[in-house]
Length: 295
Image (cartoon, rainbow, N blue to C red; front, side, top):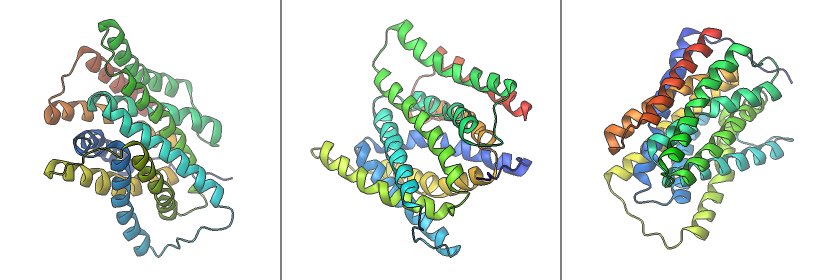
């Protein structure tokens, strides 16, 4: 399969940076919403809202939603990856802090680089790029090291779940890169949602049946941000970027996401900024500089 791998322009780099900034607020919005809605139900609601945005885009582009011959297996596998990844994310955020979770989910470009090197032609890892990505990934080590040094293990379960979600996210984005070479991104996103949303609500029915729901302006705002800004507009823009440009080059801009996430987690949620978080952000910043300089 011929993979489309255009070089990033300055305008595209700015767009990728903007998306990274917006993604920095996603886990904060999840944290807000989890105060009144359980993790699996929140995922279902979020992507139900996001799908409406994608549906408008697909309608305007006059894209057929019919699943073509030979697409079924690929789309089912994508939906499986998506359901598992989002489930780990929401449950993980429930068991850790928003700032920590934002840093951990932002390791997905590290996994993108690995999976892209294995699965995509024309997207190989050079030594300098490996150095930059490794520095950024080491920022995550600071988080876990701090927990063990301070013997503060209350967030470890959530941290490991988020790291697992980051691995699946890296795998899913590379898989999307392959699929969008032959499937319109809009049809792909809608089928991904259509196959996964029932699973989220089924899991909620099984595991969250006794949860008492609570609605307020903050929770609704969190759902709007997750659904419209991220699952709707964000997914459209990100999918088109990964379709057209080198996956590892696009993914690396998301190393800026944890910096935004930690700052706004402190401002909006009152979460502390520890030495471990500061150290991780410094390593992430160096990683970004090195990878972008390597081209």
